[in-house]
Each structure stands twice: as structure tokens, then as C-alpha cells.
Length: 399
Image 1: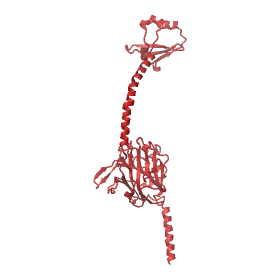
Image 2: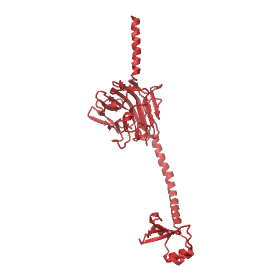
Image 3: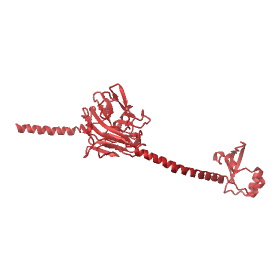
Image 4: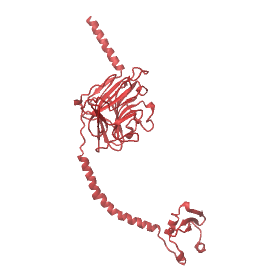
């Protein structure tokens, strides 16, 4: 009897492991990201800090970083079924190099692959590029935390629900509802940790996004809700993770803890075990600013003061050389009617082609208007290769 019972238990254990494997890992929890970290795949500039924080971007401009759970998650029991309910929660920190200047943001993402080689940084958040942004074949669901205002954004501090496009189907200013009637704003680039909950109901197709300051209980009222059937978006097996990108302002994006579950609520995070990200010390930035200011005052400005007169003199001399004239002996006979080359140059607007009246073997004739008298004139400009002799030329202008 005992042997038979032991056999049944062993069989059920094997069956349980088999079902768990076939379900493609329906839940997981990370209270920090500590080695050996075999379940997380990082790409781009993403990395894991020694203290166990998932660092999506570093102090690099126009680059992106990705971090995905390395195993696919099964969102449908079969390819023809609807998408199952799922839930996730995570704690993140956005730490800009300069106070108040974030770029460009981060996103929780569900995608067909954990590698997105064609994604662009900056405003594309490492999710799309200029070609595939908005394509239904992308099969991407994301919740963005955007710190730069683009043409389709409400402001530079918002949360959005994205489906195959960075043009959010729903967006709201970052914040949370306190006791369901008072909205409290949160600043994404404040260097403060914040917790987010994303819930999808497979029966009603309602998507809820909720956020709150770190260590605060989940508010009863979501930040925003929208009804969208994700059955046309999510495939049977998908990858879940995070994407982030830096633009013109370098910013570090961190994920401190993360849990996920299909067909149920995401497991609670043990907040006391999460790594902390120190707020950036602004002292060295102030020192650098003061140094640059002093350098500008004592080095660049004196150089400009010295160089400006030199450049001015050079410009004057170049201008004089441009209009310099050498009066030849034969010109003295026509001294009364002689015109300065400078006046003729301005009259013809620099001998431009749009004032050209004709062109012959000895030169070209231009239409002009004298600047002072406004009198129309015709000016012949003799070519350097002209075969016209001095006598012929003098005879021509004497007529």
C-alpha cells in the first residue's frame, strides 16, 4: 500500500513539473536582481549594478537598453483562445544627470522577442523605429513613463498605455489618487523610487495602471483605465521586460524589484529587500558649472576682446583689396566721366547672371541701377581672355 502511494506521489510530482514547464513559467518574483541572474537577459547598455538594481540606461547619449525575462510567458492556453488575465508590479527610479532634465523615459513591455535590434533610442524608447512605429504586426504592448514631450505627448511627465505605437491609447500625468478623490502629482525624474501596478482582466478586457510613492499601499483607484482586447496584440507566447532610451539629456533608469503572474495577481514584493539608488550629489555639477563660468569669463571673453579687432581689421582690408583700383595713364583723359568699380559692383549686384544683357567675344554686358541716382546703366565687363586691344576699347567707351 505504501509503495503504491509513493508511486502515485512520484507520478503527480513528475506531472506537476511537466505542466509547469509546458505553461512557460506563469509567474516570477525578483526582490532585487542578484547573481547568478540566469533568468534575466540584458541588451544594449542595460546592466545589473553590484547592489542588485537593474540599470536600463547609463550616462550615454542616444542609446537604449533592454532587460527581459529570458523565458517566454504563455498568455493563451491555445493559439485560438483569448488572452488570459495577467498582473505585474515593479519599483523603478529615474535619475537624471541634470535636475529636472530627463531623457527620454522607460517602459514595461510585452513583445514577441526579448531582442529588439531595430528599435531606435530617444523618443522611440528603444521599442520602435520611424518605420515600424504604428504597425499592427509589431505585437507590442507597453506602459510608458515618458519624461520628454513629443508631438503626440500631453506633457513631459506622463504615463501612457501603448499598443503597437508610441501614440498612447490612453495617457495621464504621472501621479496617484489618494482616498479616490484627491490627485497627487509625481515627478518621474525626482530620483525617488515609485511602484507601479499593471493589471489586465481577460474577461472584461480592462487595463488598469496604478502608481504610488515607494512603500505606499496600492491606491484603490487606478491612475488610468482603458478597455482594449489584447487578443489581437499578444501572441500565445510572449516575452516580458523593460525598455529604456536616452536622448539629448543623459539619464539613468533603474528597476529595483519586479513580479509577474498570469491568471492571478502579481506576488507582493518584499520592499525591505530591494536595493536602493542614492540620489545624485549635485555638488560636483555645481563645481563644474562654476569652473566653466570662470573659464568663460577669464579665458574665452578676453580672447574674443583681442581677436575681434583683429578680425575687424582683416575684414576691412579684405574689403578694400576687393574694390582696390589702379588708374592707368589712358584713363586720365576720361577722369570726369570715370566711375568707381565699387559703384558698378553694387549697381549690378555683383555682376550676377540674372542681370546679364548679353555676352560677346570681348566680355559681358550687365544691366545695373546706380545706388545714389537710381539711373539705369549698362556695364561691360571685359573678360581676362578678351582679344580686344586698348585702342578698340577706348574708342568704344568714347562713343
